[in-house]
Amino acid sequence: MTKTKHGIPIDQSFAEAASEEQLQVAAASLRKNGLTVEIVDSPSDGRAYVNSILPTNGNVFTMSSETVKQSGLEQDINNSGKYVSLRQQLGKMDRNTQFREQVKLGASPEVAVGSVHAVTEYGHVVVASASGSQLGPIAASAARVILVVGSQKVVLTLRHPCADWRRTAIRWKTS
Image (cartoon, rainbow, N blue to C red; front, side):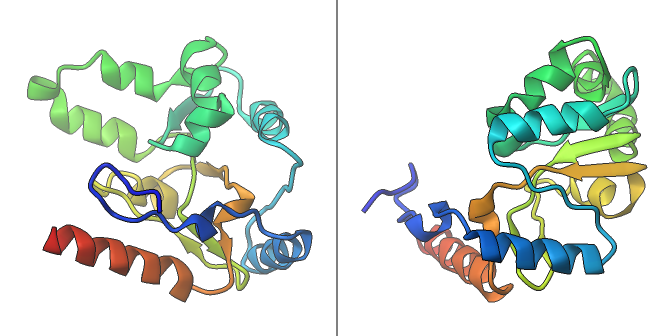
């Protein structure tokens, strides 16, 4: 069994793509909850779609996300010059003397681009954040939130991702 660098077994069931039926059920539930959903066929299609809806010269914040990074969106947003990258602005600030300004800037972007840990077929979205900095913009303070979600993140109920986190947290605590 494959393990993390901390020796925690990796549950490979979370690497399996959801079926087309599961995607459609989850999308319908998300729409019923008032969210806009676009299903695409590949990461490159997702990248092109997100780039097509981002405001040129708009202020965009890329949340810490492997999905956003691997799709190429992080590079597009932060280095193409087409958008005002809040991540680039934050990187130029002195954390020791400008920490509060950094927090404020990251807390209320025009557009936040990130991902989630899971989406249930009932239309619930599961988001966690090591520092908590992603929660505010996603939940309320960003004017617009774009979440890029791989089909492997679609699960039946909240029980699935929460059970995995509980196992992980217990292993970390006892390690």
